[in-house]
Length: 406
Image 1: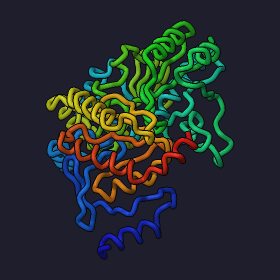
Image 2: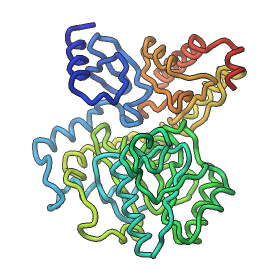
Image 3: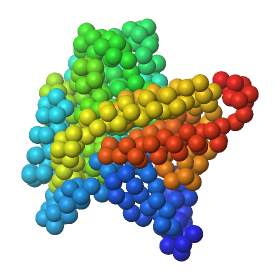
């Protein structure tokens, strides 16, 4: 290990909260779908900073926008107007089908804004019921977000905020039994990310929308991971035509720069009044300039179509090459949001892929999550597939052990 790499790791371990189990890789620079570490090793990034770098690492147009804006106006607070924020607000409402936007700094903050919007809406309507989320979901790590998520993220942080309930996704019976006139909102990831790349069915989403309309319940879509062209549409709701009342977005929105947004219809947004929510940094000129540039790249380079075509190629190739493999339960996903569900835990596969020059990730213990930059080349896709399948074969336990674990 180089002295630089060693120093960075030692400083981090000595001073940072011990909350991340980091891989023994210290990244130094990046471009497109590639990153390099302090030792000079090159990797294809099949994780894209967890679905953030959709336009690629350090896209020249995003970098230029950040540099130009940083020399002009970085931060002003939301006591004043700025052109980058006004432009981004207009663009996001246009491409999302929503009427209003609240800017923040992260996905979890966009979730909190959605929760507060829903609570205000419910209170105005005299509702005392629950905000319903889906089992196996992930909406962030704030207290409000973990109140909706998995037990493992809530453990040790009691008392957990009340007023939340969970139901199994794609279960029509549980859905109908749970939604009533007192229900405040339903929140769904159209494609669960951390939960293992699991799409909600069109029929399920249609039924949710119908029941929400029937009982005057707000429908919230968490598109933090699956939105901004990742699935082949600008927003995942556009695949089914089931339009929510609120959309949460972040990750790819800033082209790698931190920014989040909560988009809403007038019906939902009007429930929040002056002074009832806000942010100091959210929607700052620098972040908005980065997001404007990233969205322009997505449009100019037709990255929605690229995600659809490349994702279809990647998923079909993996399915064909692994047909009959006992190591794999299922290959699923949409666009360049793909999950390869293994019959064994995938941590060793991740490490093996790193050794072979591909950055990857495993969600929900067994699902290899593939969410590369949308600008990834077909040559790079083929390399990712080769490395993924070689690593699965090299790390898989004996077939008898696989059968026993099923």
